[in-house]
Length: 231
Image (cartoon, rainbow, N blue to C red; front, side, top):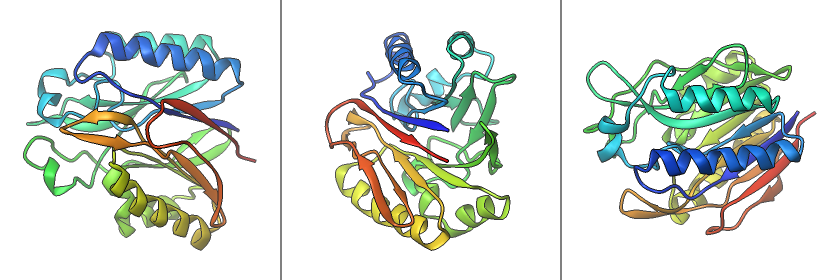
């Protein structure tokens, strides 16, 4: 599998502009032979929980349908972060586009700062992509042992964390993910955003590890892509 992580800088709440940015990164990833392209947490709207209620959508919303059709024409799977409709409050979700169906995964373990504006979704199952069983973690979930273990129990062969973290937060997250890759002997990846989000600055440093060894990383402030071959 050719995995590409897209470290992007969203415009807060600007769905149209962020969608065009996603399309540009999708085109670039396709030129580089990506099988799976993964964006950061709430990439389509920016990580802005206070705006999520107005921006929340379901998987059949026009922007996601358009991205799905383009991903299909590029023959790639694309994982996009977006706020989805919940029962009372919006949810922090990922949608995997480009396959036969749009697959939606939800953040089940919320950070305490998110509880007032978001609701937890059901725990997500492992997804098979290009013959690999992939376990997705959404930001705070990477710190939850029970969430990681549930994915491993389902046969996850690799873990991908989609996050929106500051530089300080990425230091702790990177150490945790590196340790997981060493402990469980599977490749582990993280994709973060850069730029302003929810009153702070996202710290980039998207990266990957295998058996505790770093495979590559981006810097803390520049949009870009990071590529890996996962055998």
